[in-house]
Amino acid sequence: MTIPFNRRKFMQKTLISSAGALSIPVVASAAHDKVTPNPIGKDAFGSKASLPTGKVGKMTVSRLLLGGNLLTHFTHSRDLQYVYSLAAKYNTPEKILETLATAEEHGINTLVIHTVPWALGILQQHRKRGGKMQWIICSTAEIDDKMDIYKRSVQEMIDIGVDAVYVWGVRADGLASQGRVDLIARAVELAKQQGVPSGVGAHDINVIIQSEQNHVDADFYIKTLHHHNYPTGPRVDEIKDATAEIPGYWCNDPQMVIDVMKDVKRPWIAFKVMAAGAIPPADAFRYAFVNGADHVLAGMFDFEIASDIQIAKQTLASLKRTRSWYS
Image (cartoon, rainbow, N blue to C red):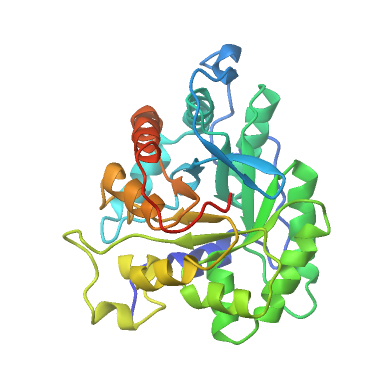
C-alpha cells in the first residue's frame, strides 16, 4: 500500500541519530525562538483544580494526561497537510510553556511525549520555572540484540529527569510482528533497572497479548482505543493492512482491545481516543473509561484544556465499568 506521508518512517529518520544520541538541549534549538520569561507568572503552578488520580508504578498520575503530539507538531491530520504547519506556527516554545502551565493549573500532572530534542529542552525550561509536570517518555531508538543504542537513549532520558519510560508503540508493533517479544521484555527491564516505571506502548493488540503471555514485567501499557462510529471512520477493507497510517491503524479492532484488556491487571493508558480530533472529547473519554482504560491520554491545545478537564471529571463521576481499576 502506498502512503503519501508515512509519519512512523519520518520519525524514525529524524528523531534519533544513527549513534542513538538525543543531544537534548537545555533550551529550544536555533530553529525555534529563544524561550522568554514565564508570561503566566510563578503562581501558575499552584493548582486551582484537581483531577482523580491513580498509581502507575510509584507515580501518582492524573486520570487525564496531556499528549505530546500537538506540542512536537507531529499532528495526525489525514490528508490535511497544512495542519502540520499550523500546529508548528501556533505551538511556539512560549505557547508550549503556557500550555504546560495551564494543564498543571487545572489538575493535569503528567505529560506523555516522544524524544524530540528541542521539545525536551522546553520541558526542562518548564521545570526550571517551577513546573512539576511529570514526564512519561518513549525512546524512538532502535531495539536490537545488542541493546546499546536503546540503553544509551534511556540513560539520557534518566539524566534529564524522566519520571517513566515506555517502549515506543511503533517499535513494539514491529518487534511483536517479528516474534521478538523478548526484546520488548529486555527494553522494559533496562529502564526498570534505572529505578523508573517502565511500560509498553502499542497500536497492535498483539503486542499486549504477547507481552502478557510471555510475562513481560511492564509497569503499565499505553494502548490505542477508539470506536469507529464517526464519518471518516475506517472501512473494513482499509484495516486489512495493519501498517497503514490511517485512523483504523490507531485502533483497528476496538472490541478486541476491550476484550483483551479486561483481563489485563496492569495500568492502562488509552491514547488516540479522539481519533485525531474526529470524535468529540465527551464521547471519546466516556468510551475509553467505560471500556476499561485507567487513564486517558489526550492531545490538547491550551484553549481546550479547561473544558476537556471538566468533561473528564464529569465522565469519571458517573461511570459504570466492567474492568476493575488497576491504577
